[in-house]
Each structure stands twice: as C-alpha cells, then as structure tokens.
Image 1 (cartoon, rainbow, N blue to C red):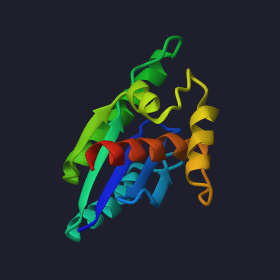
Image 2: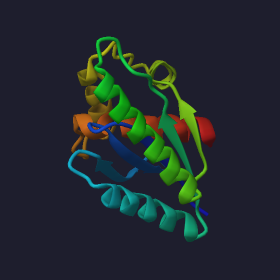
Image 3: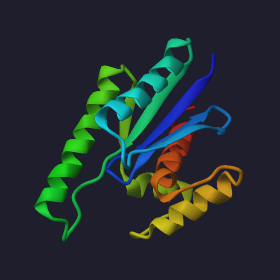
Length: 150
C-alpha cells in the first residue's frame, strides 16, 4: 500500500501538491483560471489514488482574511475555502487543517508575507520540478503532511 499526501493552498493564486511516501512529487495543480468543474476533476484524480487501495491524506491551509483586504475579496476567498472543504468531504478524502505559521515554522521557511521564501525552499527541495508561486506553498504543505502523518 502506498500513501499519498496532499497539500492545499486555498485561494485563486493557490493550488494543490501531491507527494508519495518517499517525498517525490506525484502532481501539482494551480487554481488560477480553473473552473469549479476543473477543480472537481483534480479531486477525482486524488480519489482514484485512494480507490486503488492506497491511503490519501490532505492538509488544507487554514488562513484568515488579511488586514486591508477588501470585503469582496475576503468573501470570495471564504467561498473558495468552503468549496475546497466541500470537495474534500464529497470525495471522502481525509483531511485536517494547518495554519501557515505551523507548517512554515516546521519546515524552516517563515515567509512574513514574502512568497519568494517558500518558492525558493520548494525549488531547493525539488530541483527537478518547476515550482511556481501557485504551487510552492501547496507542495510544502504536502511535505508537512507527509512528515507529520507518516
């Protein structure tokens, strides 16, 4: 039986990263320009990993609205977060929440708002994978999941 670990960075500029139990990248997906149906297809892909008798676990980053973030963007982010919770539940993917501070501290990449920190960390860890701002946090959340759920 193989175990797969998913990290989900919610929001329009986020994505999903999936690692196997050895820490190898299985897949990354970005949310930008994706429809709800496209995102549902990503969760269907994850479900198929689980259906093959392998174990899947996910961490969904629990974030809050930011100071100076507008009401409309806060609402849109909340809708996206709820949609991702619903996808995990509907596809029967076991998951938990993790704060950015918790996984960043554990992996030694506290950003203090600078996404370049996590992008550089992910690129060093997986030099043969193209890391983008959309996938860096997701893949690092997956790594945190892998290290804590082994």
